[in-house]
Amino acid sequence: MDAFQGILKFFLNQKTVIGYSFMALLTVGSERLFSLVAFKCPCSTENVVYGLVFLFAPAWVLLILGFFLNSRSWRLFTGCCVNPRKIFPKGHSCRFFYVLGQITLSSLVAPMMWLSVALLNGTFYECAMSGTKSSSLLGLICKGKPQECWDELHKVSCGKTGMTPADNEEVKLSLQAQSQILGWCLICSASFFSLLTTCYARCRSKVSYLQLNFWKTYAQKEKEQLENTFLEYANKLSERNLKCFFENKRPDVFPMPTFAAWEAASELHSFQQSQQHYSTLHRVVEDGLELSPEDDETTMVLVGTAHSA
Image 1 (cartoon, rainbow, N blue to C red):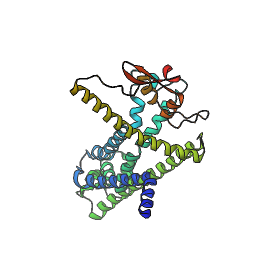
Image 2 (cartoon, one colour; image 1 turned 90 degrees about the horizontal axis):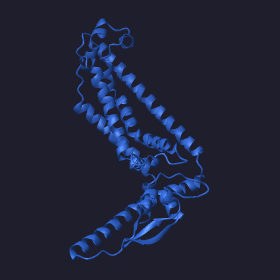
Image 3 (spheres, rainbow, N blue to C red; image 1 turned 135 degrees about the vertical axis):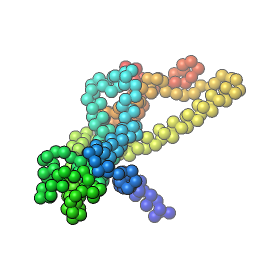
Image 4 (cartoon, one colour; image 1 turned 45 degrees about the vertical axis):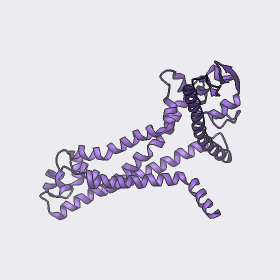
């Protein structure tokens, strides 16, 4: 049992690495599936558009999904049209761009993986580049090759050029090599940029290493318990309302936060050393909640800053 708990704890501690590894495997599998099943290079003047669409369209879709599935995106934008102060709070106007940058960086992981895998495979790039009409690119690709390479480069992917099979294969390998070089350059650049941004964020941290680890642990536990509490209170409230509806009687008082409390707890969190609050909810609770009856309901009225929010 102890060994099982140790293994479980190890996987829980490495869930970020495991998640990225699973994403990488899923990206590789999806790219191979696209290459084998859906992708058919037309070997015509449409090669450029066709190859670039297969190279960048899935990356764009993954980027949109990254924004869509990131809960911080909706926390950032929910209600911003009604109250712009939510995204540009007084005294923290630049906070919006900082959080948006974090969301964008996290959403870029999957698209970068797709582009890297697709370039390392070389199929999409080979098709796109074989349709180029640029004289400089044609000179780079067909240097030392017969005239057919210049005239029929778009047919290289299908092996239907007037060149010898050896020359045709050499051009294909050259295009795939270019694609793989670009893929490794992209991987190295993304890794180095990720290291720089992580180092910069850690250097600008307002808390120590141990406190930062505690902060992450607290945030995770609060998120888990908040979801459980949502479910618990939703079950209790729905059960009370249904019971009162079918029994035709007045409902008992039920504790619920006020509108101001919901608004304050939904704001973006900004850590301050003078007040060691590890989340927005932590700050709201520490600022004070006063119980008072209102319309036969027990409500939580926010004291102090929530009223001004």
